[in-house]
Length: 307
Ligand SMILES: [Zn+2]
Image (cartoon, rainbow, N blue to C red; front, side, top):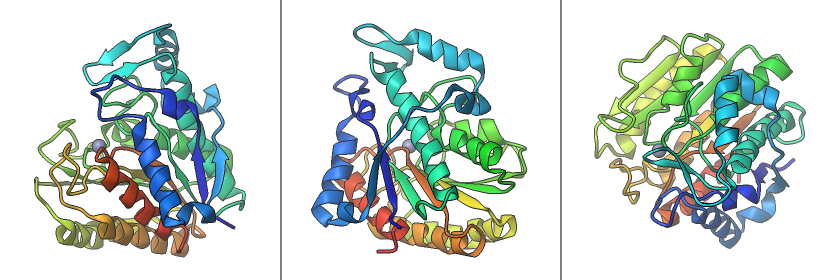
């Protein structure tokens, strides 16, 4: 059984202007590095289905889903916020990005694959129940988590978010839901200016100052995340895999490197082995330095695939 690699051509067609860092070339950077490293040939590559409406509605209001569907421009762009725009392909891309997580959950729960990585965009972790923001339209990881609980009967899920930005949308959707433990680490103070204090006990939010490096992050993971994950005994681990905390990424000021992403992923795999039959579904969030992004995803997937 091989690690799944899910993506969809529409995710390449969504774009928000030539200046925008959340660009289609991010997916090319990832696939280029996976091919060049030889890792791609060990992955089971599949095209992601669109998420069904019922899956979207577990995490979002009907008003939000309908507003996005109605906002698709025939040509040009429609601005949802100063950073977040839709082009004619964005809604389809968002459906397939969310659908990748749903499909990945079905595959790992069905025993088709032990782990999965969803190379999708738009990203999701800033999308709130009722609001698109911060490059995100639907909250892909939250939709996947809700699907795992509703369709597969899971009672305990962990969402781990190592993007440089706080996953405020995921917190908005799951704060106070004891079935879901969310572990986050993020630069603070920084966009989206949330996360501290955490909104509920199931949110393990760890704000860190600019220029925090890998040694400090590993110490925080060991001291704060891992005991909470062990106590929660998640039956499935979902990852909001943002790589914008890399030291070469200019959107953030943290100082992680590929080896740190590999180490964090390895720790999560050990938790998954103890409690979740090794099941981990990882979904792309941020990561804007194209070279660092591609190299970091390779390091992450090598651990998911136990290579
Ligand atoms: Zn980010």
